[in-house]
Length: 388
Picture 1 (cartoon, one colour):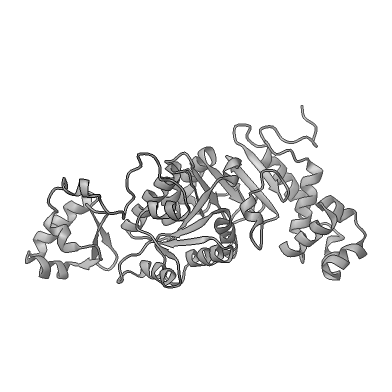
Picture 2 (picture 1 turned 180 degrees about the horizontal axis):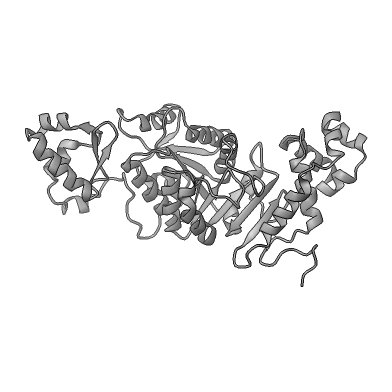
């Protein structure tokens, strides 16, 4: 039987309980933010050394208020240590890690950012933290085309060797993770809760798949609930892990634009997929393009910009134009799809374009919807999906 100070079974990160306790005390002490903690680590070398240092020496680095706060451990610290230690060794068949600044597993891409997390909780394939990656983000309420684009782009990028990083939210994030899991480069989910919780619960099964075949990551302690303030903060990790950020669909006021801004601040590329000028879900992407983001309509555009080869034998992404060779063999287009175009359209507009009755159009639209070629949008709008 292992002693209480030996690392739990099934982990690859060798961290003893005393070291864990020192890190948690440093991070969780009130009045000591991330910047102050980093200054203390730079000055003293480790959390243990910080707590061994004289109060006056600590105060010279971070001021009297933080120094006084560090003098006594938070009341909840022991309970958090026990909870974290139990999580770390809970399942021998799951690779669970606590990765600190200076750890060999710590992602070098985050070290290049202005606000790298002090400690990461990880579950799954920790090597993905050091892989070439692309962030894929967007609306929690995307159109059907947006969902398809997120999954198709992510699948091809993963097959080409880029790990897909996103935030496990509903909509575009979930579709991006699904696509990433289809390729060898897999996917990383950066979440805004402790790793013992899944938010939103609708993504519980997806989170389990990512933990087994990809990687779940959080900077928040075990037991942390889904607090609204945590999610914008974690976006800097999504942007920081990746060589670039792809925004699939986004309204003008959205967390995806926060992630894009953080990517730009970290000197990373930002890509955006254009959409209908009438769609609120495309306005954020169009705003990014106006501000200098790179307009992309295929995964190959991103691979070329990042100077990565396309995946051997990969099929074109959603949004990519068919080649001349395939165009000649394309069957005649369904007339109603031609009338739909690619923008959302009302039934009345289709009546005017086709001359068909509303009853006839409703029947054919339902058939196309069941075939997955047309999506029904809020406000009694219809939109074709893909190129079918």
